[in-house]
Image (cartoon, rainbow over all chains, first blue to last red; front, side, top):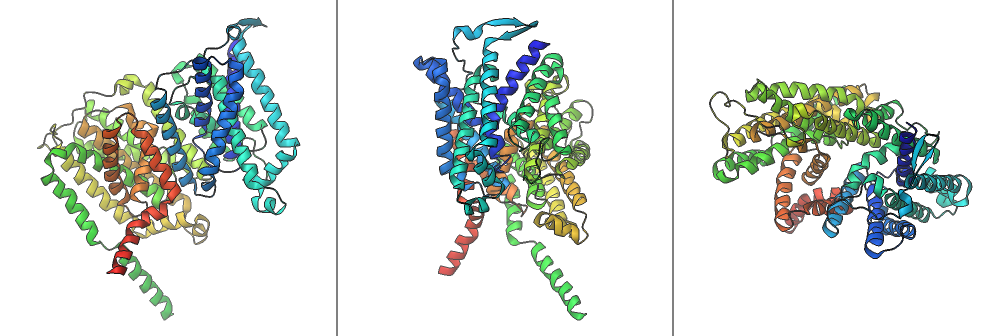
Length: 286
Length: 331
């Protein structure tokens, strides 16, 4: 019971780190980016190549995965996404699905379509008993890292100068520009960090989520659920949504395997109908 | 007062002008019939293109006329496919009767799910339609005892068409059957979009708030157009099940919904023929790419999607008209 709960929390934390970038681009900037999972996949594959291919230590590979995914995100934002911000939702859907297809076959072409496994350090395979729950070191690491990231993000958005610039740029880009905020730069930086975090999540979670070229499509709905349910009021909404989703999915698959992922999709539909702006929407948000 | 009467007369005339049958439309359908006589070794391909075209026509009603962006339209197609397959397998093997039952059942499914797309923004609609699509696909997978799961539904053997023609392996009867059904549904859809009701649906797409202000019940319009489109998508699925005599989980897959959007975008939305034209172009492109790189053709589909958005849909759709204008200007 507790073991399941803990696994669910770890799973949810992963979903949060991957999807938090999306909750800003999609939830705040209204950019329908179905290709967000592709950045997570990029991070995962970079880690696989570094750790398995070049023998880079796992913990050194994680920051590299973050930076590399962020750079890919920045490059795509500057060259492609920047033209899509103001397009219609239909165009954004077409564009990002196109990117997903390209990423999937690109990876399958270059690396192959088999599932990848990262050689984790030995000590991450350890398990220990806490209050009757069996806790894996690997999942504990995920919870700790992702928890710290969540706290840092919340701090950045709520307390720092950059955070207030971002909130201003999202609420009213025109006025924000008038106040001397470089809106394009803020958006680009946000997009890059969001992609980087997705990459980091993909790298950390390759073992739990499974890494193969269908990754962006397989988890697309999950990331969308985190954003849709979490709403756009800061980072706490997506975090709670991701944790709920993780726990529901893990325990759902464990206790009611015949229903599989039903519960989650039905939950998402119900939440969207009940509160189209998400559970934690804020006044004045779009 | 006379100016009011004149206005009405002018408007009626304009509407009749828009809805009159153009020579190009007659040529299009003649070509489809001619294909039956002159391309006997392409029946299977033609059949598939025609079914996809009908499926895309259904999305055109939702997207091009109703303005609802759907990412889960394959739900109706796949549902129709499975209903037709199961009907045929377990008793009701008459193809036409099967189509009618499928139309009613998918129409009902459309009616039920239409309430989900009435609320919220485009984003909410995209996510809800996407979830419905994934949900149905998951149900199809879980009910393996009924649907055959990943192995597919086998043993779908429809009766003779109208008690006379057997579905042959070359697809001759299949293509004729699909063509006839598509034509009938096309005429119905055409009648629908040029009716006063159809014009009010377009008004909803242009501006829902103003439309409701002049007394048109916006939600009811969307419910009707969504259910009708669902029924047509279901019939397209049923045609596939009956003519290929096999149903696989692939009919519910997400990529089918995504491909369908691409097909409709290539062909152009909001003039009914976009789906059929797009289906033909898509098939040609797909075949050409698949010959080059059989495994990685999705990459090129993705590239086409990205390019379309980068260049701008209006420019691509407007290109033929633009070229024609230039040619005429020069001549």
